[in-house]
Amino acid sequence: MSLTIENIMLIGSLLLFVSIIAGKTSYRFGVPTLVLFLAIGILAGSDGIGGIYFDNPSAAQFIGVVSLNFILFSGGLDTNWQSIKPVLWQGISLSTLGVLLTAVTMGTFVWAITDFTIYEGLLLGAIISSTDAAAVFSILRGKNLALRNNLRPTLELESGSNDPMAYVLTIAFLALVMNPDQSLLSIIPLFLKQMIIGGVAGLLFGMASKYVINRIKLGFEGLYPVLVISLMFITFSGTDALGGNGFLAVYLCAVYLGNQDLIHKKTILKMFDGLAWLMQIVLFLTLGLLVYPSEILPILGIGLLISLFQIFVARPISVFLSLTPFKMKMRRRFYISWVGLRGAVPIVFATYPLIAGIEKASMIFNIVFFISLSSVLIQGTTLSVIAKWLNVALPEDSKPKSPLDELLSETAKAIMVEIKMPENGVAVNKKIVELNFPKTALIAMINRDNKFITPNGATEILAEDTLVVLSDTQEGIGQVYECLQIEQP
Image (cartoon, rainbow, N blue to C red; front, side, top):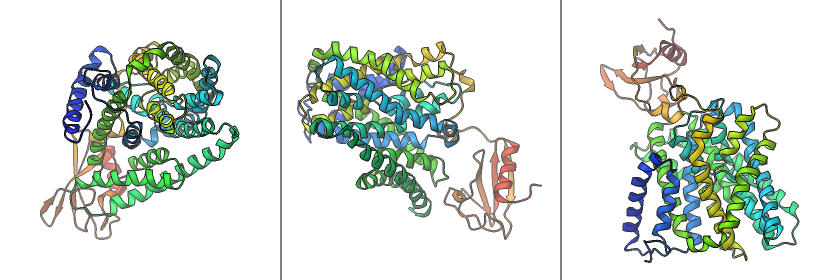
């Protein structure tokens, strides 16, 4: 069956529906949801029962890039700066030096056991060098794992920030495969340009995005997530046009925005949480359709050998070496090395050699697909067991809430106070979003001229307003008075 304009919506919606239903029940059997999405795509493809013919690496790459934007942006929005600050340098080391060490180790191994040239081996190593943000975010949050000693922020920071390094290495080694006369040192300027411009642009676009979101008056709450989507793509494409890494810029922009007060932030977070899931499903379904299982069978032996080397040798070596400067217990290092999940990102990066048309592109793609699938199956299904075995898991009732959980929490506020705004109050003529209001409290209503107003982030505080404030602690009420610079009675 070929995809046409007439049937693409029907087929797509049916695949989406089946994926959601299958994903709902998959964890009962310990199978990660992402594997189900891939399996459904494979079954629907040319070699499966669906017979859908899809052989378009360019379209798959486009879908992959768009999906990764949403996945990285959603992960960035849910990243608490206070949580990642203590592990910032560990995460940076893992996402740069760790990725490089993985690529070199894997590339050398592939070169030694196959007929690949050294550059072809390094290209394959670069493609599978990063942990997958979609896989890590999905499995850690889906399994609701509570981990000790900032392990979870470290893992999520690494997975969200290491794709740019893998992308740069993939592009660089692909260029060396196509032009083997070039020096290996020629990739250094490309790396520096991509990472420096990407990092700076991400923060600048984040600051500009905050200003636009809080200043523009759209009139409809539902338009704000749409505005943020447009800003996300402007960040990616604008950074790419400047020669920087768009993936890094999108992630940093989202981390910045996720730690700021934004108008309709709850609506934005809810929307992106749903869109991230949608993009994960679409991405894995698409990559499943692109794969021909009959072409993977001949490389099962070499694929399994490379996959096991990646899981048990290359990943641990890169983690232990990149974390050498930091004080960390061995069991934490072991667990970080085990959560080296490969997923959709390496498969998306494997489409670049296909589009470039290099000699071993098809073999590279099939090996990468097998490695990603085996990684999610072997490592993804055992995260909870290994966490308990290494004693890095926390009891469920002591699990800290993520920023998304806290913002969307419906916990009742037990304490209520009314605060009259003086004529010269610091909050007068300011929007609520500009007040840096405590997270433990909220303004439920405003009494203005004996009329009650339900406020939002864009509501301006006027003199003589009476704020009806709710909080779950007396300390939260004290923080409110401090924020408004009013003496507490």
